[in-house]
Image 1 (cartoon, rainbow, N blue to C red):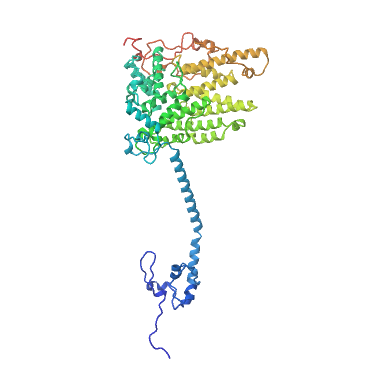
Image 2: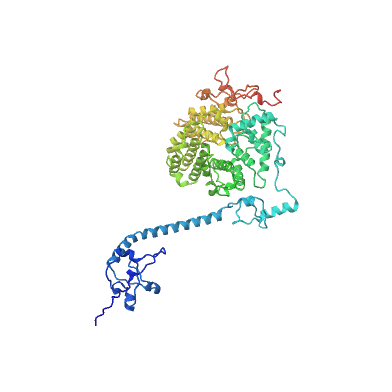
Length: 637
């Protein structure tokens, strides 16, 4: 029997609406041109599970599983159709990027893990953490925590000793801090100099030394900051030849006594005191004739005070410090680090700064107010770190060549600061490090003569560039520069005693000295004394033998034994063998009046020995005291 009713259209997936991932409903009628036309048997499109169960298999042909298998969590085995095959082909083409994506995810996870590990190490090793402005007021607790140490509320180490000291001061009424008046008054109040002279001294200090501690105006120096004020006057007094020696001596003793008390003050230390200590580290030898300060010890203790006092070491950039305060602290910190590294290498000692704090030095280069001088200090710090590592590597020095790879990389990195300008001392420091490494290697290598050309050549480079120093730049040169030049001259005395550069640099140092107590004068005397002793010993050796190199035999003799007693007065006429030392000096080095033009001499100045007179009637003086700076005791204003 044949059915005559209207045909029943089977319901299949092409008449159903599909809910896409974005939640909107799409009518299948609008997409029929993209669907296969005609009737498709359900068994051809159903999965293996639905065919076995003889149930409807509701699946999107672009999907990979039907709804039943998804709900039952079964593996859906769909038959391959032409459309699905084409779709799978495009899917597999896209799947080729999956491994690279997975590799990137694994790399990102590994990087995040390393960052988390480093952050944990920083938190554990850092003495302090960032502090918010709300913790700037002093707030004590039973654990002894306070905002003065720049601690974060999330990490406070226990400080029982600090707690006991604070409670002791509270219970017994003891003062925890000394004022400047408790330590020492200023030299004007003490009557050592009068106010007019102190004004001139401060002006001279600002002009030649203030840049080291970010002091650009005399108004920045107040008498209330006694240690800084006295130190500034002491530095300037070195270049006033007419100033009585007892006055300079009294200022020096006052500063030394104040430093001895300041160093034992409870931290934190004020900014002006750290500025004074930094200046004393730079000029520890030249400003004190009575009782020299050890720059290595002084810089080490000052660095410990700075670690507690400087906020930028304990906080992240952009904290409560103003840009000018941050720049001043960064500049002081870098200068202290440089003096510590200078003294460690020059004295054969260790460095008392942790690596993480030295790594803070380049931060100053990111500041908008950084100067080329700041960059030079950072370059010196990196240079001396390299030299110290090489100096303590015996294996490297035993087989050392004329060049070191680390120093060459440093030279390439800082080539823009290495100039032949006489005012720049960066080249002097590089050659000094090379000279020290070459001489150390020569002691360890059996064939020491192999490095002799490098040693003498480097010493000549140092002296040659130093002879180009302008007279107006000489006062600002730190003690370490004079040590470099003196060591280069002594090196030439060791190997080439007749080198004319020895006499030239000796005369040049004497010409720079405004007085007999100046460091350049003393180094010139030392070089002259060593040259004299070598000359005498060489003459004795040459008379007793016919050696081709008398100086080489003299080096093995006892040149500086106990038989040579200290002489309080040293006559330069005995030290200088000929006046040719001044013949090749750079023109323009006549007297100290060039530093302060417009002043006339009113006192007898320091005079060089007769040996340095270019003619019997013309003398070369070391300077003159400006009439406006003569103390009352010497001149009636």
